[in-house]
Image 1: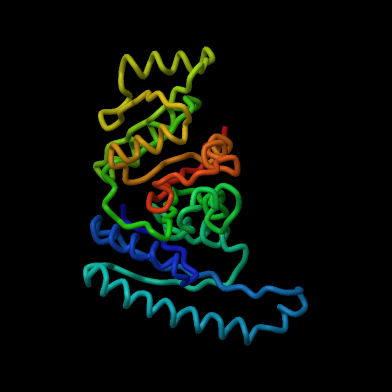
Image 2: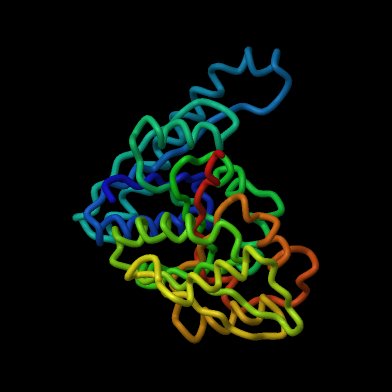
Length: 276
């Protein structure tokens, strides 16, 4: 872990993510880059005439970056290596992805809104856009999130693509010396297809990586099962892959009426789906 990019709009939520990223950067001796994208909204002709306004926005963003850098050094200590970039462009998510690629970043950190954080990510937000464009892992930090280290990664699985994704998670966990708990929640009357049964058999006979632990828990709902596991095992982060969005929408989407207790504090770790 050498470089972390913090995508910020200087809001209160993004400052929570900034403190999370700064503490992580200090622990792993990584460079933290603050990134803000500036753009004008309006009709194309109006934007063409607004160069001086955009320049003023860039100047203001640089001042905000310097203030945030000072705040983070006070929060995380002088050992925090911080730089910043202000970039003109839109859409913001594409700018963040391109800068991450150019800077050879290992990780992107963004902020998202508290108790509805998972739902906001899945159903539309700037964090969702970054997740869908980024070619490197993204951590989305809710407004009540605090950095506690990454010692335990929870991966909720429907058993599809499990083995290849566990390999990705195992490689990622090596940087953090973290445990990966892959959890499948078995529902009453659940019937697995042949592929899922085959995966279950293989996982039951041999773990694919020494850091990976496979669990099957029984519950009345997947939401409750994950909720209880996260609390009982003190999970630090919840991982998912972007091609499992439908699975996560089932867990956290509009049909879920009660608030999961870990929504407000558990960050989300996303990985870009693999191109076939």
